[in-house]
Image (cartoon, rainbow, N blue to C red; front, side, top):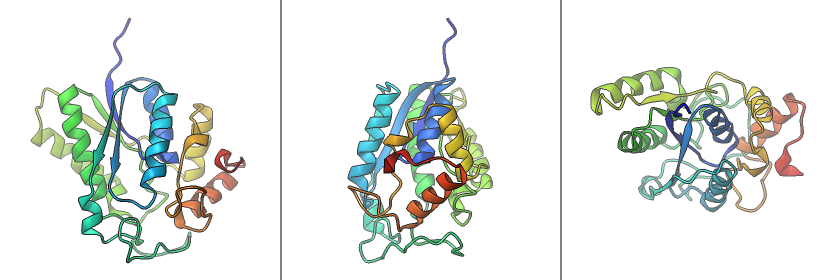
Length: 222
């Protein structure tokens, strides 16, 4: 039997990371990484992470506590003094929901873990088309980070970041998830609430619009 390559998958509990996990599951042995960083829906996201991990029977899980990101603030996701705005698909500039350099922090953790367990790949479910103004979802960001991995790690590990859905539209991500039988019903996207989606924030509006374009019903709303 051919041995599957190992992959660390960053899983927030959201739709994008869930579909990314489904992609990685096709070819790799999975390890799931999640971060609690003081986000408003931390409890719900962690619950979604564990449910998705259970679905894929992932035993190797790492949940990291990054409470200092909340102390730093600067984002409406972590700073109680900053109000999460209602959704606007046409908003210009970097939105207040951007957590400064968060993806670099998450990837640094993933690289450390991947190097330790000799993982070949790190999967991250960013969608640059979804939020084009987030600087840490741009293709160049990941190209540079892969160069950094080569320079700053044990070269024998050969870990590489994979962004399988970064160039897709949100509706395309949904269609792919359905095709791969990803558990979209277990995912959580809302920025505001821990119990039911607010249906008003950017994440909820983008999700609703994407399911509409994909011409299918959001299973979370069933």
